[in-house]
Length: 224
Image (cartoon, rainbow, N blue to C red):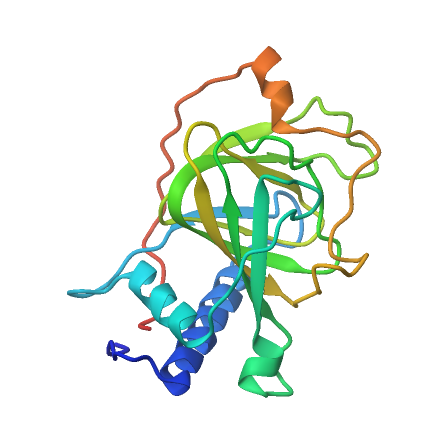
C-alpha cells in the first residue's frame, strides 16, 4: 500500500500517477477492439483505510490543477490535465490524466468520439449520466442512445471511436479521465463530433428508464 504522507512528496505523487496508468492499461487490455468497446466497473479499496479519493487529493496536493472552462465547447464543464509525459520524464510514457468537473444541469456537451485515444474514467464524486451509442460517428442519427447512471467510484473503460458523452441533473460530478495516449485539449485531434448533433437535452422529450443488474467476477487488483 502507498502510505499517506503530509506534505505529499513528488516521489509519492509520481507513484500514484504510475499506478493509475498501470491500472488503466490493465483495464483497457480487457476491453475488446471489436463489438461493444465499452466496459463498466467499480473501483474500491482492498484493505483498511484505502481510499481512491485520498490518493487523488495527495496527487493534487503535489501537482495542483486549476480547472478551465469551457471544456469541449460546454461552459458548464471544466477540466485540467496532469501531463504524465512531462511529470514522470519517461520516454515510454505517452499518457495523461485529466480531472473534469460537470456543474449541475450540465446537459450541453454533445456526443463525440476520441478517434486517437482510449479512456479509463473514474467517477470521483457526485452523480450524473453516461450516454453512448453503438453507431459509428459516420452513421449516427441520434436514434441509438444508451444511458447509464454514473456515480461515485463507477468506472467506464472504452476504446477510441466510441460515441459518448456525460451529463448531470441536480448534482455536480467530478471525473478522473486517464487518456491513453494523451492529446492536448486544444489539439484538433482531441475529439470529433458526428454530423448529427446530440446532447442530453434530447432525453427530456424521450425518457427511457430501466433497471439493470450488472454482475461480474472480481478482477485482479492493483495496490496503490
